[in-house]
Image (cartoon, rainbow, N blue to C red; front, side, top):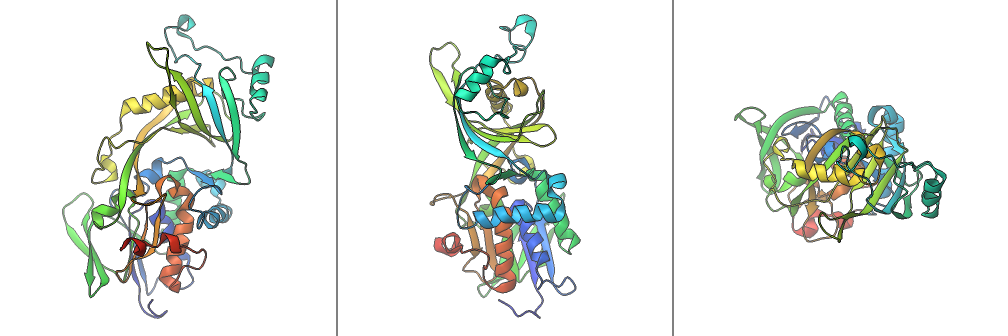
Length: 405
């Protein structure tokens, strides 16, 4: 790209995990000169206002795509060591497993319980412990119901699986980038302006007003997640709505991320339905749980307008409460929804790298692995900008130009 001495005006569109980590690694690069260059992170609402603030935060060496996962997983470890991630954004290694189980617990204050009190599982009786061991459940995973448990399969260990608190991690990355000279501007990008096949500026509307402004740009990095298509219409990025809740359990729970398959009896029916919520225990006595996605409500114009369906959140609460009394009897601390970005026409995604427009780069379509792959994506995009190529991983298969972009 340009010579080392040439001034760079870099605009990153989107202040989620990909934009924030890209800003961080751009500002950390040895070729960045804050007296000469400008790096602007343009965000419509707030940093981590979308999925990056409401995701589960699971990190795994067994995630996808395999070309960037090892790099990104390693970078998570390094960032946590460098910036105190354990305290600052809840970084820690965890166990991960698949649980097949029948939902057995009555709802809190259900009429079937005695005097409206919750039914104790007596999980720590010899019989209950025996059932858990027979199903292969690890000794310290003692917060799932023994009754109804069918099997447990290990998916990851603390050597291959970890977690962060997504909102804390994303906002920390943005803050660290700011400290290195990145400027955060709040406004909605309306167009990426080109001249002779190269980017020259970004036009945006200020947050809270209709005032239009233009930022000069020799490099534009599009990291707008599910909103990528609203800014660059040919992008093959679609949106999937996802609901989640956070719960303060009635008793502290061990560090496990669980993928579940729960058989629940249908009301007024002999048949059951199978649900598959994911449950992630977090530090500071918090548990995150999410359900299946939906396309019922189209993507709104910004993250602060996302509609949350209370009934879908209640379903998740009831489902996870059916297999754990700590969750059933806990306090629900958040009910929320967000949109995940998916790449149409290919398995998994994402799109990372240069486009056919000179100076326009993409980092979008990370599906449910955006938090996991954020650091790797940011590092690679920073290398493309400053070094002219991605050096830390081979990402030919993620090239946006394969899609004619």
